[in-house]
Image 1 (cartoon, rainbow, N blue to C red):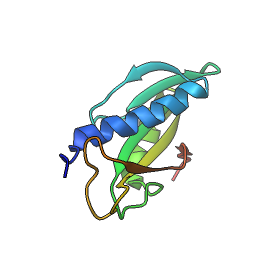
Image 2 (image 1 turned 30 degrees about the horizontal axis):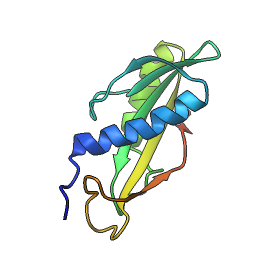
Image 3 (image 1 turned 135 degrees about the vertical axis):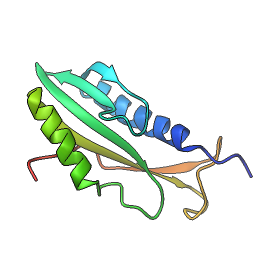
Image 4 (image 1 turned 45 degrees about the horizontal axis):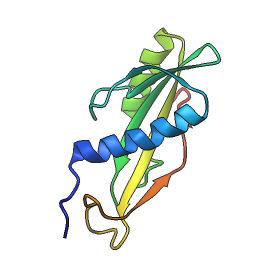
Length: 122
């Protein structure tokens, strides 16, 4: 049995997954913050528009598409001062052998990621 990934390692994995997608979609990174509780994780520019993206790694049995509404509303309020759009990116990271177990270093895992969820006014 390997070593379970720490909260920071899971967060970094989620950041890499979202970051690769943003890059592929032509987003330009203005700022990246890899601390799990410091938001947003990505500040990006695309077509001259600013985007704030909050990234969360999610463990089984949580749903990666569900987000903390009050946190995201605060982010939306903050983003609107900068005329930015706000997104939530939840990345489910699950042990491939048994979802009840943690994700282990150098072992297979399942990614459940549905892309960016835009936050409109609550």
